Image (cartoon, rainbow, N blue to C red):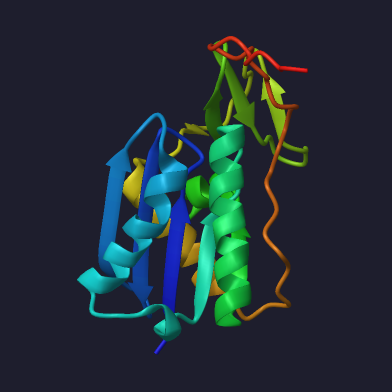
Length: 190
């Protein structure tokens, strides 16, 4: 039996899918703009418990590595790396492009919405890029709903987990946008 836990926090969601062989046996998704760091581990535990499994039953982990929200990507990738080390199982990083493309006919252009009406895209024979406008004659695919995104991450991980494992790493296409803090900085006393 192969048991893959796929999850993602690269957007305004916290989502997980548990795949036993090729069947989804549990899935949980919560829409949230903030709070993924606090919610991810309980959501993963609930997903496992829903199907009657424990952490030790996992064969591998699939994790969404972006592109997407900078902090969200770091949350899920660090959780996957920590779990993989603790459980001594592989963690497979799956880009949103790969999860979007899973099961889709070729050729197409997978895309991910980006800030300021831009789009992350990966054109054929090109590196992923942040684009102001997308000009292509190929069909353009947007990411699926978060529940299907987690399922596709688990399915891609199922196909790749036996390969030479690498540590999942965030897929950053542009530098993080650092916003100024909302609250004033505390006064530092001498």
